[in-house]
Length: 358
Image 1 (spheres, rainbow, N blue to C red):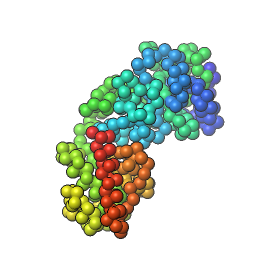
Image 2: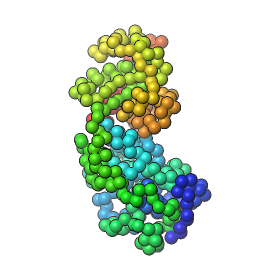
Image 3: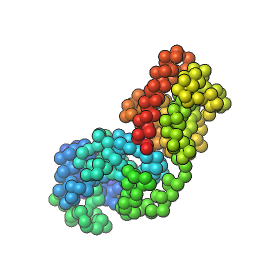
């Protein structure tokens, strides 16, 4: 095993590139995470994952955890995303929390359990973050010990255990927490604590006590976002008392009425918005929201310009709900046909949204 000392705060590019080259060739690399040292492989390489099972001596019914390159990537791999899970992500990622989701069809097959679940984590340690960012692939990760044995307390223990099995160990010094991640199953309501790690049970459970909050965002908050707000309330009446559903605009003039065509079209749908008045998007509204769904890419950029911590909870409506990286264009100033098309797109998205978060 080759050991390279790496700056844990600002990992040197050439050392990260050496690790990436090995991972792209199906090799196993050891590195520090925010919890304990881990063994990782390219999550898109099935043979490498098979090799990690053999080295770890781990039963196949205990899949590895998927480390995410970006916080928002979890929507690619989770079929259902309850708002309680979204709230845990908002509060504890990046960090020592692993969440078990119902796996989507795009998940690496070798990381899905017999129950159809996948464990995901967005780590805060710069070394795995840099590997994934520069390599442009997620990692399949497990702790750097043999299955069933205690977590490694030193680099010497890792070297002694895996000296002939892995090619590279990135020595980043001591890990931040020194304790394994907390694991929560979010496929059930309320979520179920599987393993209490660095994050205590009480802190986890307090996260989803308050009323949930879904925010729709467009430009003027006079057609698309209030229509989406109204349609969700109409399609999901049993939840509107438990979830705050509202909307705002990135360039809204506070107090403006909806456009006449928006009022007319929504009245025909039995979802009136004539009493709606526009709200200007601000930092407080963003930070209180659990999930922010926008109509255009520019809206997402504006949300993040106002509050960068919103990353991971702001998505294109079509992307989050339907897995389509498409915008819903502004019908303002156009014909009834354009409004009808816009409403159809929103309705289909809301149906997908209700499935995804319910």
